[in-house]
Image 1 (cartoon, rainbow, N blue to C red):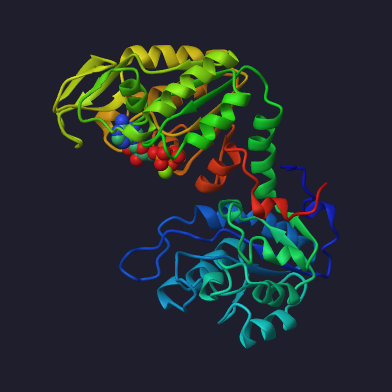
Image 2: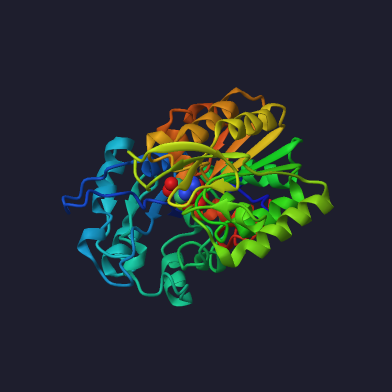
Length: 398
Ligand code: ADP
Ligand code: MG
């Protein structure tokens, strides 16, 4: 995939109506009060919005929120987003009552340079997730240029993330540009050695990433729940640990493939087990492959921590996807924390992809020490799998 794309800086937006796809899929309080519990995604969109307004564009922002499945669901209205955005920008955000209906059309038509409006939740329209050309065209007809800044949604070929680009010149905003530069750069032309740290719960969800990174990385480090499938495949005892028996052959293939390619593949040598999946479980540390019945591996052990921290010390680039253990329980967060700390101390370019990994790094207090934390869990995963991202592929090449 060519990820060298035109950006907002490559087009003249002065006096133009710009359709801006954002990722305003923010978490809302469960009580239906309309309170946004984390406005990070709204704040992340500000640089592009502010730039467009400063340049004299009239901005028609849009986003999806949740899964209304093509129906109007008041609890998934973007009205609270418009209000928060207005507070952050210090200016009015005109809220449309619909996506491409009469209210949106009229407000878009009346919109003046330097003004911003927000369309309703794009997924209120059944055509959004089906990438219906009629919906894409109706959205495009309101504007003259399309700017995509919703990295969290670029792996979806929906009307507002990809379809509209069939009808308008399409460029990226600053947020997407940063993701493309860092993740794309690390994959295409990494400062070596490139070390990939892969963890999380399941091998099955990370196969694409392991496969692609086997072609690119110098070292691959395996941690998290998926490590036990590798261990079992090599004849180890894994007790009640997370195990995907169907993927054991695959795990052995990966080990073989790494050997053939000269990629260093590191697996845990010890593990922290609990006697139940709970924060107050009893704990013991055992060698890999020697987990007793009734116990489950919930974190990498101290010997493994040493080995892994050593492996990232002289890295040029580190890509990290997937926590090393059940970091949500403090007793099993040590492996993840040690790796985060090791990354914070390297000179390497450090890139964190994956929703839970990003949350772990944030929660453990290392976020500002990383070079780049991706804003799109699913999108960054597919990017690292080497897949084409429809919301990026549709943008004009630089
Ligand atoms: P990401 O979102 O970063 O891609 P995943 O979704 O693949 O990561 O995995 C994250 C989850 O994996 C976390 O909730 C964590 O608790 C879980 N996990 C990590 N190690 C283990 C383990 N040994 N056993 C069970 N779950 C684990
Ligand atoms: Mg996850």
